Image (cartoon, rainbow, N blue to C red; front, side, top):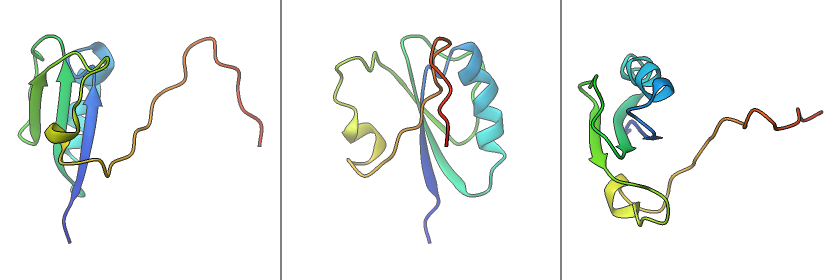
Length: 83
C-alpha cells in the first residue's frame, strides 16, 4: 500500500511552516508537495518544494496527477456551518 501525498499551498508562510513538521511526523504521509512564491526557511525530509504561484497554474503534473483532494481553512469572515 502506498502512502499519502499531501499538497501544501503557502508552504513558506506562517501556517505552512507550522504544518510541515506535523505532516513529516505522520507515518502515513509519504510525500509532501509544497508550493509558494518564495523558498521556505524550514524544510523537511518528505518535502518536495516547487516555487510557483498556484493562481491559475497547472500543477497536476507536479503532484502526480488529477486524483487528489484539497482541504482549506475557512476565511475569518466565514459563518459557522450548523449540522
